[in-house]
Each structure stands twice: as structure tokens, then as C-alpha cells.
Length: 612
Image (cartoon, rainbow, N blue to C red; front, side, top):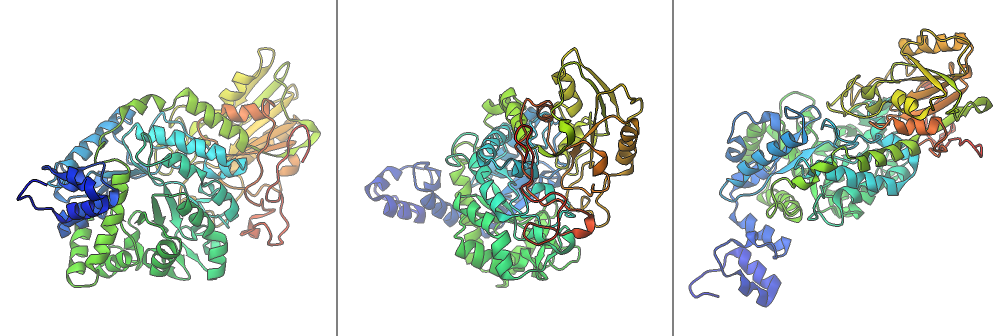
């Protein structure tokens, strides 16, 4: 070493780890700036240089809309930002996202230590907040495919489109096991048994790639830990009142699988387990997740989740220390991040939160930032911009749609439809509605009806598939149908929703608009095929006898051509129910093995040529 130069603590650690290679550290850069050093050594060196304020800033994740002025990111030394479900830049283009990301990132890099931001987004079925991105079927549809290899491919394609906008962190997949279809997040679940979410956790491998440092790798998040799909009454953010044995048997296995796959982060659930909020549950986070499962990544709170611990608005010092001591490493405080930093600083200073706990949280956060290569490549890799909504990705989505369709009824072989010499009448509010087809979490948190993004509606798919010798007539409400038609296709179901607003504590049937449309078709005497677009099974037992065919389409996303492929037999349906289909809403919760008689059992699904 050059004489007179003193090794910093980090250099000593590095020298010890590397032996003679430590010689190469001679130079002016701090050890954490050397990419060839082991991540552990880089983290130790950087941590030794950080003040308490640096460390508290790293533990904060603010909403980008909460950044009120240029310089706020650097001033608070923020470690992370997110775009919530309805937080898109204007214009909502790939370029604008990338520019926004890079501007925030440059600000973080301007701080004395130059620690890059990590930026999160809810890309839960493709990069769904970005206009023009490929939107895949929601998880319940992927669960119907029973195809883990497909899930992995979707993870990879999503990671490319997310990377194109600079984002490093995806708050997906949801590994909840939905046990009550009244829950508004049922469609975010792969199904009602742990085996489905466990097998489909391959999507994590797709998102994260072979290593986080690879181009177009984004950090995945297993959420929501734990038991959010098992709340009493299917109430969102509710209370899961079950034994630890059942919690471990039903809800823990997918998280164990995610940890084994090296998932980078785990998000804590808003819900409670036997009246204790998960955001304050040290046993389940510290003992089970970090201890027993050996999770080494970042535990992140949900959006304002810490504020919900005591059930009152406005977080308290007690809530802050309870959540951090329970093992939450990064806290999503969308707007009041400065108040949170000040409160947490007070809790450290008064001894309610230890310096060791703050260091542990920072170690976990910084480790992921180094593993992602953010110190070397902090800005957007714009070569992935061409992947957004690309033909390759849309073809993959179309394949996912095909495989997710579940044929539930096919009297007199009404399906597949004949492409030639066929007179087809198409009706229903969702036949030509991309927003209904994509559902919630699509260019907006709750989603919306109408042309919310670009893609192919189910009606367009039908028109593109029928040959010129056939006619396709469309009427949204069914007006104009008569005896002359060979078949009617009704595309009906739920309109978009996300958490809480999507809870259905009362009836679970079709709405009056759909019932009126279906009645018109039935009255005409024309054989009717129903395509049900919904985030869960609906209460349809009374109407079912009037339908000749039924396909459960779930929420297929932007590629409606995949539905048409199944309707016309270009693809023989292979989808199987990932949930048990109720005979009536009052059976909820109904799950495989509980002895309740189902309208269609878990795993049911017909095909055209071979029957069930």
C-alpha cells in the first residue's frame, strides 16, 4: 500500500475478505465504489460512512407525487420512490417514465454518498400502469393454465417492459391463497390452494432473471405476508381468524417457495392474524420469515400500512417503533416521509429502536441495491424500449389468454364456432371494451371501462377470426337479434375494480344490464354462448340452464384474440378451475375439500374433442 495511507474500516474488511487482492484498493475511491469487491464488503464500507440521517432516509419509500419540489429527494436522503396504481407521468409514455426515473435518480446520486434510489411499481399483470404496455391475464387466469413455465416467461417479458421505464422493483407476484371469493383481490390470487401459488412462483425467476445484476432484471416482491386471502368474510384488510397450523398449511408454503427462489423483497399485509396487525407482528416477520425461512432481502410495508396498526389516522411513535422492531426494513410512507423520518429518529434516540435494527435494515436495502448493479448502472437502460407492447410480448399474452380460458358448459357441441358460413350475433357490455377485459390495476389503480390502453377486444378477435363467408353482427345490449342467427355470443361480467371497492359482501350475481341482455338473447331462441369476464366465480346457477355454452374468461388483459382462438377452436381449451365454483353466494367461503356441493368443482374444465 502507499505509505501513510490509512485503510478505512471497509477496506480492512475487504482486505480480510480478499487477502492479497486488497492491494488493488489503493486509490482515492471509497471501497464501496469498487464493483469487483464482494457485496458484503461494499455494504460494510458504505454503512461505516453513513450518518443516522443517511440510514433513516434509506428506509423510506415515498410516492413520487409526494415529492413537492426539486431537491426533496436529496434533502431527505430518500432511499426509494414508488409510483402507486394511479401515479403515472404525463404523457404516460415509455420515454416520459424513463426521463422521470432518471431525473429522480440523478438527484439521489447528487448526495455526498451518492446512494442510488430503488424505484418500485405495481406491475401485477404486465407493466400495467404504462399506456401501450402488454397486459397479461390477472393471476387467477394464470392459475387456470397450470403452466409454471408460462408464468416464468410472463415474468421475463414484464421485466423487460418495466426495465424500459427505468424501474428496478416490481411489487409482484401476489402469492395470496384466496379462500373467499367475496374478496376484491381474488383475481390477484393464483387460486384457492397453496400448491397453485407455489408452482406459479416461477414468475419470480422470470422477473429477477438469473441474477439481479443482469440487464432487464427487476426485483420481485412476494406479497402480502401473510394470510390476506383468508380473512373472515373475505373482507379486504380484514382479520384472518385461523390457527397457526392452518396459517402454516394454507398461507405459508408460497412464501417459503419464494424465499427459496431468492425473491428480493416481501411485502407485509394490511390484514391481521387473530386480531394482531401483520405490520406489528414480530413473530411472523422476525421469527418465521427472517429466522425460520431464512429470508435475507427487504421486508417492505404496504402503502401507509404502518399508519393502520392502531386503527386511527396519523402514525404515532408507538406504531413507528412497533413496525420497525417487528422487522419491517423499508416503510412505504407516500406523503409524510419527513414526519416519519423525524419520528423514527426520536424512537432511535430514546432507545425504543436500536441502532443495530437500523443497521440491519440498511444492510438488507443496500445489499439489494448493489446486487441490482444500481451503483454501476443507475440510469434507464433504454435499449428495452422497443419491447413495450411488442409483437413478441403480445403473442405471449395471447398464448396465456388461450390457456387460461375454462370451458364449463358445451351443450350440443355449440362450441367451437364455425368460422365459415356462420351468422353470429355478439352482445354484451364487455364484448368491445378493453377496460372491462383488463380489469383493475390497469392504467389506474381501480381500472376503468373503455379504451384505457391499446389491444384487441374480444369482439375484434371474433371479427378477425370469422371468414368473409360468415357475418358478425354486434349490439351491446342485444337489440336486433332474431331467429335468423346461428349462434349468439354474450360477453358479460364484472366491471373493473381493485382492493376494497371490489369486495362483494352481498350478492355475487350478474348486474341488471347483463341480465337484460341475456334475456333478450334467450327470448330469441338462438343458441347462446356466454363468455364470462370476471375476477372470480359469479353466482350464475339460476341463469345457467338458459345458456348452451359457458366459457370463464377471467380478466384476460389486452389480447382478446386469445379468447376468439378458443371460441373458434383454433385452440382446444385446456384451462382448469383454480377455485371452486359456488352454487350460490351464501356458500362462501367454499373451497376444495370442505364438503360443500359445488356448481363446478376445483380443477374442472372441459375440452372440445375428449369431454371432461
